[in-house]
Length: 377
Length: 245
Image (cartoon, rainbow over all chains, first blue to last red; front, side, top):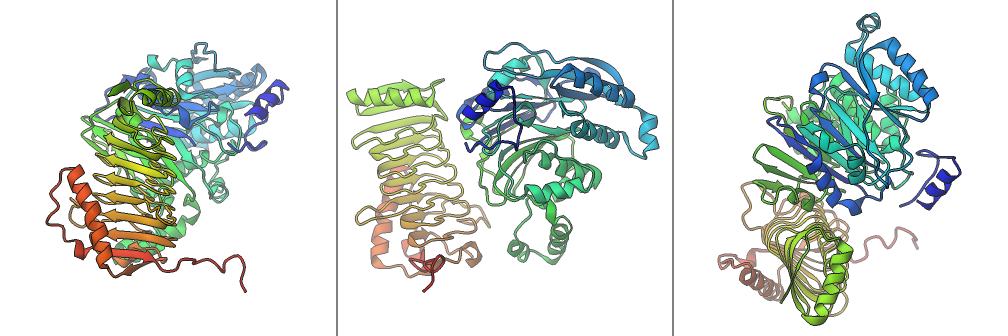
């Protein structure tokens, strides 16, 4: 951490992967399955309780259902290092999208949150004729544009790009980042949060969780040993890992498997946290065939190493551990709500007498979808 | 008996408050505990703490004689490197219970998470014991080097296993007693089933009686003779790994 401060003072901010600081994380999520919306105070309270799991080098939130008045537009949240790159990026945006509305994301000064980039928000719709010319649907067109900005526009970083959802993140403790973005003024039916404790790389604004693409968001505690195998795999399909941190690849894996390859979520989870071969051997022939084929075809999409994640998308949230549960994860239900957190106390501070509380097994997902969503099967 | 309200108190402040309180009264109660870490760390004999709420990770770390009673669930790494003392949990607890535990006793009313008893050890008269009323997650007794783990498997639902997979993986000492004989595939290759001796039965009876009394459960129908016992295949399984002669 001392190194980071020193380098900042020199005006030579090194980014992820350019510097190593050997130094855990916290995750939390809440969904109201009836779709009732509530402001960000509760999720901040939950993630703040786990303050000591993070070290002030990253905090962030994903909120679903916050832009109902713009629900048909992609909400792009962008960090800019300077005005020059902002102008260049806006030229690109104007060429590829109809911009319905643009402005900076309101923030309020918080003493501990410093060195923030320019933070802008655009509600956009893809230029339909351009998508058609490229034989792409709107989502694919939009994702390609986002990947292009993040890859080619140095100093610009699209950190949120879904519809009726948004990500808010930065360098600081999560409760301070929540205050900075005034999350008490947003109402969502689902919130996820992350407190960062970077173990291999320094914290910077783009490197904070959640990592998003279109409606997908991922918060992650752990580290991915298989990162490079996963990265090479998704990059063969047009993605580009630009942040040199491991978590972003999980977002791209889910986007690729579920949106592009149309694999049901149930199977996608068996790809990401595949059962062991000797466990597969004890199943019936039909299941064996299915699991063996997905393990063979998608061997490089298996995530190895310790992780607990919460994946958010428009239908709800899914929490998942690595196969041998090397990170903690607790879930609870009360009435229409499902809670997920790294620690039980972070649930109990919001809901002291849940109807049900359990510790999911390794590789066994917790699925909390909005009422009426059936994608699971 | 002094009561401390732990609401909105950081772990550092709470532990300082406990340190101050036990100078005056060795019996204290904590209420509204939400995730504060290290409660009971290093505390000595004759200190008794009742804890209401959800104590945080590493409860009883390095504890050296104190007694903690939790009315609620525990989180991860309870009894980390604990040396001596007793923990009673009226509920379940998270992963890595009794991590590298060196002595003392832990009683858990219901279930424990992954890796309970990981690398617990013993030396001469120092023999740590973990007693669990329900079931355990995977990797029970991983790298276990000493001490004893007893699983009662009460209230298991149909087809539910008393322990998860990889039980006793890397085990090179100590004993695991299970109130059931699980499928062989649930065990790591370093654990092997052994005959229950008369001494084992006396040992089990003593700890099961304490469990039954503490949690007010009638366990008379439990047939201790039918417990299965697992020990390490080899006390030094990897002696040739780094240098072979």
